[in-house]
Image (cartoon, rainbow, N blue to C red; front, side, top):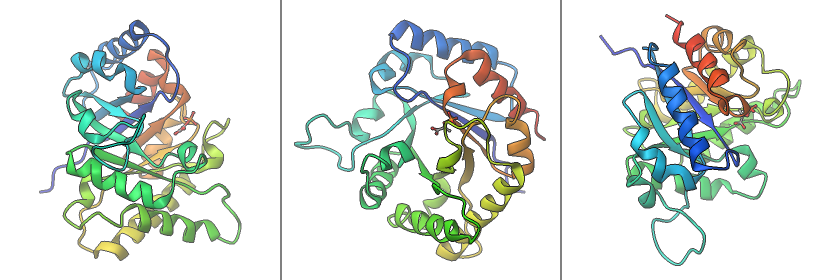
Length: 254
Ligand code: PEP
């Protein structure tokens, strides 16, 4: 019998939290308050500058993520950080192609290279995809399909289950309301269909997450009724009680 995959909840701190002490306190608090959870993998993705100090706090349950990497491994690329740098800090996940980066010019070609670099260094890439408008004609479906095709263009059938797909409709990011769980379910099914078209019906599915205005009140419904494997959380990952509230509610799902 195939092992049931654990749920995954990732907190993307973005460009927040401004002292090492605060970063350590946040991770220590998350670890302490989530001690009793059993079915959920937890990831915190702080700014790069905290990785060295947070490395000592990672555990089997709480892993470290990064918010980006550069598309090459080494060389004359002033200001960039590569997957190779991250391996020494026990970084297990890296968010790639977040809409905030795409909006600032990150291209599909660069995103696809970053996914390959992460896999080469045994870091799980979290490929972010999502439409800006959920239009009535369903044009967003082709958009999602093309983001998947280009983001995964360097990923083989053997590797696809080592990737995480984070579906984040841009209109829900930073918004008041999340997408409703029926729509999340439709999108999760559609993403699975696209992956089967790309890799064949017998493919081992990657974990699919939802992101956009998730909080402790809506987390369980989105994961349970949206049939996703977890959540990518922005604002609500910056306070222990809010983030752990989400984790505990997801962890209740059978
Ligand atoms: C995000 O930016 O990936 C995100 C999901 O943000 P928020 O949870 O704040 O909507």
